[in-house]
Amino acid sequence: MAVIHHTTLQPTKLDLLTSWLPSRAWYRGSGDPELNRSGGFRLDDPRGAVGIEFIVATDAAGPDPTSYLVPLTYRGSPLDGAEHALVGTMEHGVLGRRWAYDGCHDPVMVAQLLALTAGRVQAQHQDVSDTPDLEVTRSSAGAGPPSPAGEAVVATDDRDSTALTLGDGAFLRLHRVLTPAPDGPPTPPPGATGHIAGAWTMPDTTRARGLFAVLHTGSRPT
Image 1 (tube, rainbow, N blue to C red):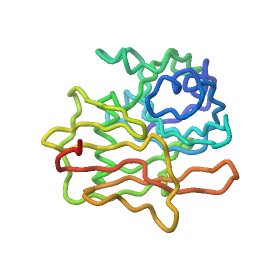
Image 2 (spheres, rainbow, N blue to C red):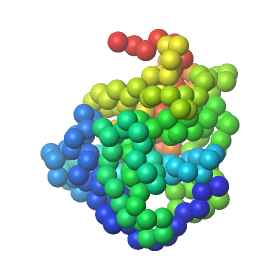
Image 3 (tube, rainbow, N blue to C red):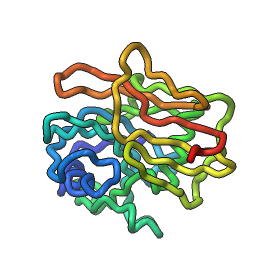
């Protein structure tokens, strides 16, 4: 299990995201985010080398607050060929310099997210070591697509999400702009073969649930 160090970060994760979010196709704001961390979870890297964190950041700027799902990976050295996915660098009080990447372009994150969808691993608490996050739920029909670990990840952004192409017609759609489920548990769309759902805190302090990612093992729609 990953050990969570409660120490200093310069700049902070929200500082990095404040600069980075306006450059994304799915960003809905005016260019000056006012971010608060409102949820998230972690996944463990089996080799213990890469930190994997899913952050729900809510932008309070403007009349309609928007919650974004941002997976980040933290590495002790640059990820080859991923310069375009670099969110920024931080100085960690224990681990030293860390390179933070958009996890959708990191094969370690994608492999572990697929493992979570298939039920092979469990989501971990965002702030407490060795503690499962029971608010994160998942489903999968069958074993799902093979893990792409070690291979290039093709990630394509649109206005609402990022589609991760997995090969053989399969893709995983990560919801970047989060929408609370209106009633009951979040329901995957027709044709989905797996999903991940989670919870976050709304600006009025109520707890919302919604889809984080949806797996399709057929052809990607155009």
